[in-house]
Length: 168
Image 1 (cartoon, rainbow, N blue to C red):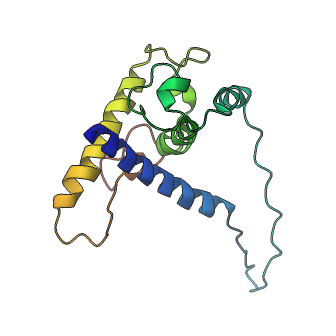
Image 2 (cartoon, helix red, strand yellow; image 1 turned 90 degrees about the vertical axis):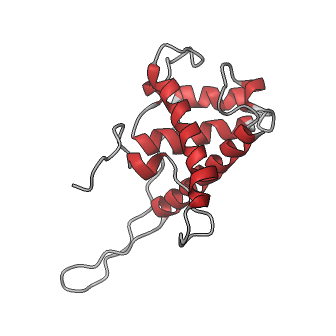
């Protein structure tokens, strides 16, 4: 039960981050020239096509979005109990963008359940660590200026595999 609560807290943080990032990505910006004239807005870019392997996974989940992830996917550990429809967005927004990696960083294409890449277990362990920080440690810090303080992959990694270790 405690593990599930931790996972849900981290999921909330990831989804919030994803919503903020998505809003920032889709927001139109107005450019101003050196003379102070407002440049016309550029048309919104067409999002790239969904890669075939992601479309295949989406098709596998279709109609099963609300089933527990472990009933739809093989070798689910950390996301057990999570609705299957949330798994791919977590992987894409949380892990891929948070660490600046592609799916192949942790997974073998075509054998997603494989344990051949150590990064997969590291990601699981980091998920648990993040949950402990959010559920146990942040709550004990007095005077935080946030009602719901949270960390997620991006907090440290900032789109890089190796997290920033200093402010240099």
